[in-house]
Length: 215
Image (cartoon, rainbow, N blue to C red; front, side):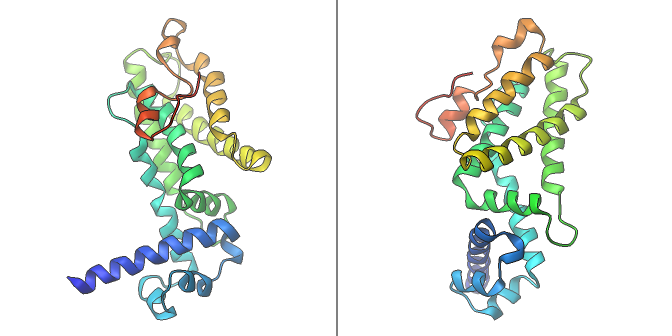
């Protein structure tokens, strides 16, 4: 049991160090030597867990789903979709693992980059949007699957522009603006007031924000 625990601790140290290096340098410039040195482990320890830099990058990307836990329970499905995007934005600002994963996916600089995390995100959003549509919160002519992919694509583009222009300092405001623009095309007019483009009070309370963004 102690050996298994030590192995798990070593793997976690390697993933944490890899996330930092990939976030700082990207895949191409990152080296395994820098990663295992930063983790305080030997080259042998690294290769015990990961056979290549590609495999290590895929493991870092695999951690991206952690931000799903940011969404509070009990919100209407469409508000949950909104809150999930704000949760991802907050994770990009506060969690080096998520920043590293986003950089690796967008760079696509290694063989056959894995887009499964973004596909899973789109699939979850589509399920929530379908539920929202059944409750009358989304117009009946809207295609939930198409809108889910549109939201994922819009988020990715928005966070790239935010990174380029302000180092992501205005990311949460840009996500709010995205929803202020999108919601009128999705939601029947008489239901628009039910939804907070800036994220629900429950979401911001869950992530410990001082104030709830307007919108």
